[in-house]
Amino acid sequence: MSILHDDIDVEDTLQNTYIKAYEHLNRFKQKCSLATWISRIMINECLLQKKRNQLLKAKTKESSLFKTIKLQSPEEILINKELHIHLENAMKKLPERYRQVFVSREVENLSVKETSKALNIKEPNVKIALYRAKTMLRKDLTIKFYL
View (cartoon, rainbow, N blue to C red):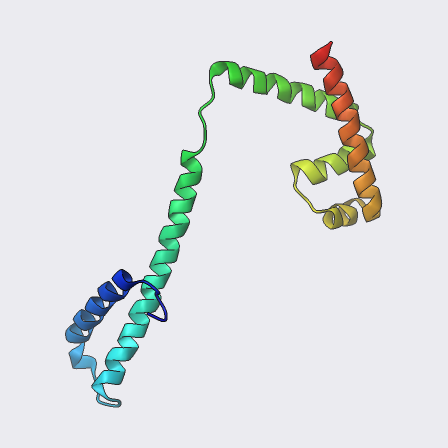
């Protein structure tokens, strides 16, 4: 219980332990007591079960991410493509410094510190440049879509 924290898993693991002990009884060399040997098998089985449970949780989490993906209608796909084209064109109009900061922070998901090192500019300047880039993009895209 101290390893698995679940009654059902412990019961299953205990059964597996006795089966493995029986199957490998010929390997028991009497260097320790039978209870110690079986306890060690039980601990190993519990650790294996814990790993299996973690892998199962990770796979379940991963598959649930894929299930939440919403299929888009052709109209939504077209709108997203158009938006992507307008965003790319607006980004091309940005001054080089602002474009580099915007791409580093928003596209490549670099931190302020990483962007600062990569572009050889101070961290406060990264924040300012990102703010200005977003403002310019917002202004450019707003003009295109509302006029």
